Image 1 (tube, protein in one colour):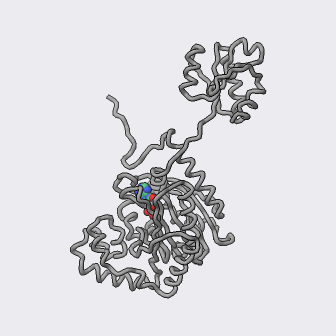
Image 2 (cartoon, protein in one colour):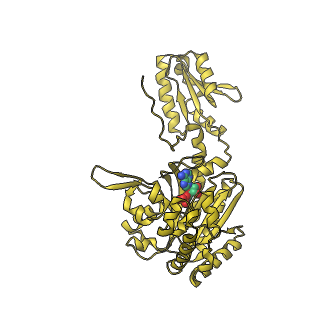
Image 3 (cartoon, helix red, strand yellow):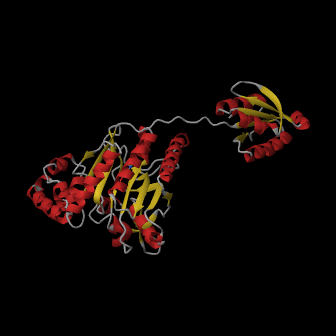
Amino acid sequence: MKRQISAVKGTKDILPQEVGKWQNVETIAKQIFELYGYREIRTPVFEATELFEKGTGETSDIVIKEMYTFVDKGGRSLTLRPEYTPSVVRSIIDNRLYLRSHPLRFYYIGPMFRYDKPQKGRYRQFHQVDIEVFGEEDPAIDAEIVEMADYLLKKLQVLDTETLVNSVGCRKCRPSYIKELRSQAEKVKDSLCIDCQRKVVTNPLRIFDCKLETCQEVARDFHEITDFLCQDCENHFNLFCSYLDFYGLRFKVEPRLVRGIDYYTKTTFEIISSRLGAQDALLGGGRYDDMMKDFGGPDIPGIGFAAGLERIISVIPFLEKKREFIYLVHLGEEPKKAGMELSQFLRRKGIECLIEYKERNLKSQMSRANKLGAAWVLIVGEEEIRKGMYQLKNMTTGVQEERSREEIPEIIQAAS
Ligand code: AMP
């Protein structure tokens, strides 16, 4: 017996009946991003593994546990991208895009890959819409991208959201916080999971990312980073919050929001929804002012966010637009060829057209047109070819009329 091959664990097909919802979300996201001055950038799905080790960070869960890494036939270590930011930064440096006038604003829509434990809202191949801005330090841009994210979610009719914001400081002030955190965590090490015990040594900030309730409980007693910010980071954060107020956005300061990636500096934020269940983050992002220079590029600050499409799509309504297509019925070999030519003519006029290739009588072709939901049926028989006039039936009204080849597209377009 032949063995059926199924989709790989943690991956999903996006089927024709749901793809309309995806296309809608993608179209609205693109329209909004372009309104704010963003332009699309597309980079390869795999990159040198080193890019993510260096970018996403060697102490992040993504790099330690979740990367799809493989060696290609040329002996290179490659990784399917688990997130987008390092790829964009690499591309900007590779293509010297930083020479263009700042700020640079890019967006991207596509799949990401993480070897995480699959569950509702968490997949091994998932899709993100992602935006990045480079070359702007002003906290007004931090507020602008949160406002854009909020607008996007409103346009998509995502309900019951909450915006969480924080500052994770910078290279000047974070080390003293990490030192303090390490000494606090050392004292309660035995109450932490094995993973977090390791984090006490490597990067205690990552304990806040732990998904275990027991570790989260312990971490609730740790000092908050907001008490350790240097003057520059504190001013930046206060201004960021005041600009969010200016936009009339409601938000909550969440001092434990460090997000699972090592490169963040200053601002981090997340928008969650109570409609999602355990995996409640719809989108998240933050500032990464050091990444470009750490990658050997110029000293240009960056900020961005990524939104998970599977999660957004799972909580939004969708009204599918009815497709208006013609079903072309033909009777006999000559009419079949005439029908093939007519359908080509109609498609060139921008009209969706289906033609039946199986031998069927008129009645069964008509019932098939009905079943498929055709808006119109065009009947081509020998008599019609001789007269150059075809039977066009409106399936909604039931009215059937004789029409010439030229009249057909005009009538259909006028009705839609
Ligand atoms: P991150 O890159 O981890 O900040 O994630 C940004 C957004 O991507 C999250 O808020 C989620 O909406 C989505 N996301 C992250 N990981 C997954 C996953 N494994 N499956 C589905 N969506 C995800």
